[in-house]
Length: 104
Image (cartoon, rainbow, N blue to C red; front, side, top):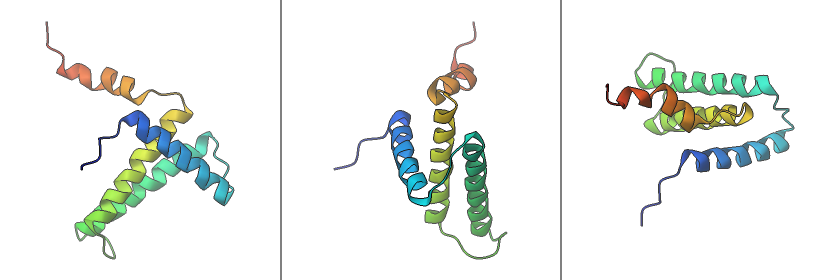
């Protein structure tokens, strides 16, 4: 039986729980800057996997690597949003989905 799709809220809550475990295990202090810097780090790792897959980077990568790095970027972005009380769904509706509304 296929798994039910996850909502952004569910992914965000799970990412927060996992981040708490990770921070506790490795004694990481997560201040405001940490969330943005960690997001940038994960974006760099996604770029690296992309470049490797397109034969423009050293080493090898797989589609699995690219997907894992994309997941890291998504989860870190959701953690960033939680830290700064950003509602990602409301922000997407306001910034992007208004383009889909009929023009009067």
